Structure formats: structure tokens, C-alpha cells
Image (cartoon, rainbow, N blue to C red; front, side):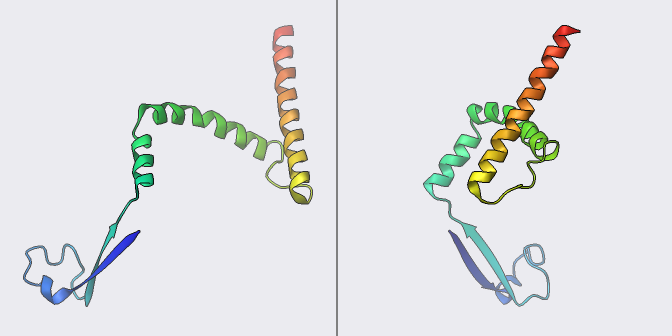
Length: 111
């Protein structure tokens, strides 16, 4: 929730900070105050915790795999209509990506 306050700039003319908090020549000045709920505060506390930092270190691996599936294996665009078709396409794309990874590992061990 945001609270917006409007001030008359004439009242600010006697302030030593005139011109710093508003541009000279404007007719009004606004001040916005954001009120965060308990849920927002809990999320901010979680983001400052060690558990969040640990999870965010692992995130690049997931994003890297998503990017590979999207760009290299064609998951960027759906080849069929509907949710079922997209589910089948996603499952087959992940299957193909995993099979190629398994084949590369077998070739490494064989060489």
C-alpha cells in the first residue's frame, strides 16, 4: 500500500534544502510512503538470511539448464496447441537432453 502526500512548494521556500528535494519551478511536490505488510517483511527477512543466500548460489545451475533447453533444444516455442501438447513437448525435450548427456558420459568413459 502506498500513501502519497502532496505539498505546496511555497511552504518549502524557507527551507535550507530548497532545490534539493524538488526541482525549482515546480508547483507541487509529492512524497510517497510505502507501507509493507507483515508478509513483505517476512520475505525481506528471508532474503537476508543465510538459507536464502545458499539457495541463490545454486540458482545459476537451474537457470543454465533452462536456457539450454530453451535455446539449444527448441523449448522456446511450442510446436503444438494446448497444455497437454506443451507438456509432451517439455517432457520429450528433457528426455532428449538427458539422453544426450548420458551418451556423452558413456563416450568419455569409453575413450
